[in-house]
Length: 492
Ligand code: ADP
Image 1 (cartoon, protein in one colour):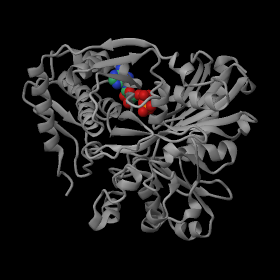
Image 2 (cartoon, protein in one colour):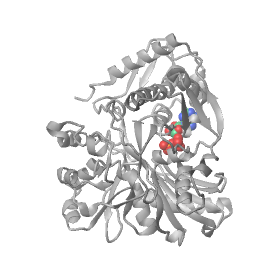
Image 3 (cartoon, protein in one colour):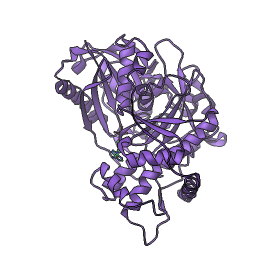
């Protein structure tokens, strides 16, 4: 068996990739699923569609590579994090649409749960602020709002899970989640890696609905159906998987992933570093019975989805790559700034009252300036989190490894290096998320023997170095900060 497979159940699509021993992709298939936005601020997925797509992409990728499932030594899973669902324990039928991580319906609930203690009520234990982003309050919302759900949950008839749990339930029959996904619920104690009884009590969540927490790298069980009999051996939340795929195994290693959102993670080793600057403390991974490794994370809600907005809602471009020539049609941003606070602002601000702003418009402004402002907003937001990270961890970053769908955009990469004044380093493989899940499954089953072997797969494609003078850099960043201030206090 010369290959390892990996499922990537993402926010906009699901893929299956097959890699060989050298870490080279030999087969891949991808399928998008529908995004339901039934009200402003709400985002939902159909979990049945997602599972059907998962089966379809596995079959298609195997066919693409001319392989049979029995050619796979193991299969791993990575997934969009925090997206929350409930299903019937007996029939496996979803009991409500899945609530996506970007959904803001739990805003008032989060404030209520914080009460007099404020939004950092559970931070010491969980590493997270109370925010609409995380799974726990979404589960509480379902228990409060889906007819009869709480009674059925208390009778032991309901299963809760993030998308890893849902895929694993369908693939192996196990009701499990891995430590990285569990660390995004606001329900798990980072030190003990167990559900926290006190928080469950305050949140009003019956323990019987929760999955069993397992390590990220380790044998889970055997697949069924399309992967019948194949060892399923790893789960990592998407950002943790990207970190794994970038071979960020040592304390001090960091990566920034530019996809739907933007996620900067710094490996802090066996230390769970608490943030005072608005970052998250999260589990990076855990290998079988070993000690967990932790990360500091700066999560930005809108990055590539700002480009999608320009395409689908503003109709200024017809596909995402067109943003680059449009942005290059003007010399600079023309003093236009775009703050994509569509679902409030995540790290380091955590302001659910913020909404999107286009600042600095004049009669001179044109589409090219807005395109540039959309791209630049991704770089400014990354600087916001990088500065917070340097302060929290007491490190001075000299280079940043990048990955994700947006890093093909060279204008963005160059601007990122300019505005950070650090080297931005793009590897040859930018599909690090799905690669990381393959690495996890391959390590668990002995397909790869250790991290060193994986480090050797990493190779630099291109390095972007800053070529902007200090005065210009700081003037641009000051205008960005002014624009952020204008986005705040929109929702009363
Ligand atoms: P995810 O895994 O979060 O679904 P990907 O890593 O696949 O995201 O990246 C897709 C995102 O990248 C989309 O939001 C898309 O708008 C954006 N994108 C793709 N190509 C480009 C490009 N050339 N320039 C800017 N953005 C791009």
